[in-house]
Amino acid sequence: ACIAGGILIVYVNMGARAEYLLTASLMAAPAALVISKINYNPDTVSGNNLEFIELTNNGNASVNLTGIYFRQLGMTYSFPSGSTIAANQKIFLAEDTARFREFYGFKAFDLFHHELSDNSFDLLLSTGYGDIIDRVIYSDSAPWPVGADGTGAYLKLTNLNADNSLASNWVASTECFY
Image 1 (cartoon, rainbow, N blue to C red):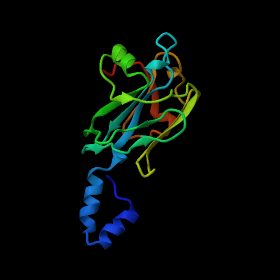
Image 2 (cartoon, rainbow, N blue to C red):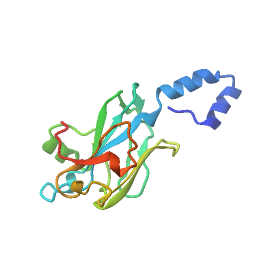
Image 3 (cartoon, helix red, strand yellow):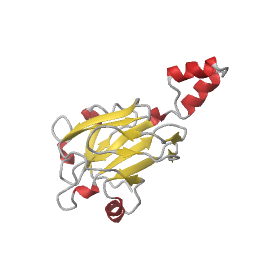
């Protein structure tokens, strides 16, 4: 888990060595988590129950997901205690895990609650302390790729190291990812 500045001072005042605390904090930093795919409005044939979000750990160490959650109104999700994601791995959160498995052929990590907006939405991934890990405010109109709006395509981040808050770093994709 990451150590906030105020907490770090408390530990140091109790005799802990700051360099050890900082090293431990950086090794498990959730900042490596990236929202990398968003299927917010599947085609009208398959229905909205195929909505999903892909999170990628773009770091070189596993990340403890305990306490991490999506904190805006609408779609909600909080990772269960003890959940982790390995380095350079991806996980999917789905609106309907049974339908997701049936359609894509593999199991989603877990189920999120409520739907993603078919128009625009603020996906805000946060630590248990409310610190922002990642944020994407997508839209179904330009400059966001309009091809991901009800056509069977999903939004795909073009580069995991790119700024995923910018519409120019996303494409509409039907690429098979399983």
